[in-house]
Length: 268
Image (cartoon, rainbow, N blue to C red; front, side):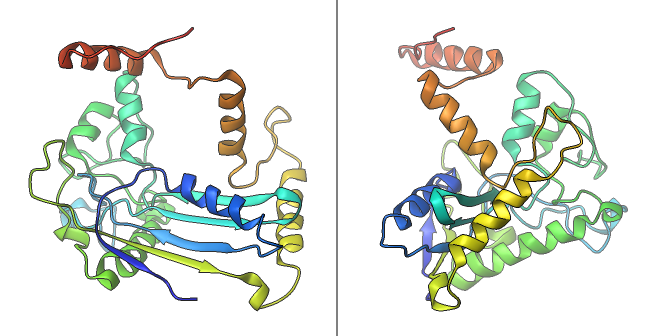
């Protein structure tokens, strides 16, 4: 195992796509079920976690400190099953807030802060301020754990690779203002067969056990990590189209008209 690093990188969006591809690839390699254990990268967005010993008192630390620093993990199980996790170290990524903003809906507690360093439910204000809360939210709900996860992302990606890290990463910009983002990325591939036999069977057993748990709501069965994305992908393939909310479609049409290009085809 030797983790390769990438320097002077850009954000490549959905990490889960590449992890899922690598898992499918490993299933065809004569039983070599590679577990892609860790991937993270500093985010170039203007999002910054409110970092500090306590999140309850904004006076202690209101400056930007870290990025969303997503972590993606994938592992192949027996019988074509797999575990797939792709998550930010913040409660949500900026895209979730942008969606609420486009739908003109408020955001829940624990998602983001306003310019005064206090939690806000105003999606527009949260989007403009660009200060997301760490995974877990405030101190009383263990937000310091999300802070720690983001710090791990900085350690493995920005600091270890020699790339920009933490507060040195420039804000995201459509125009490229500030020069190349110089993002660091870390990849680790582990062959579980080097440690103990039966990895795929044990993982499959875990996945099936989680799915068999009795749900609180019978209409919402328990899912294993990655199931929701897989089911959504299968539904998209069946339909042959991607679902968008009306506000997204309206924005795309407006942008196409502004740029003088043909709007994308919409089927209802």
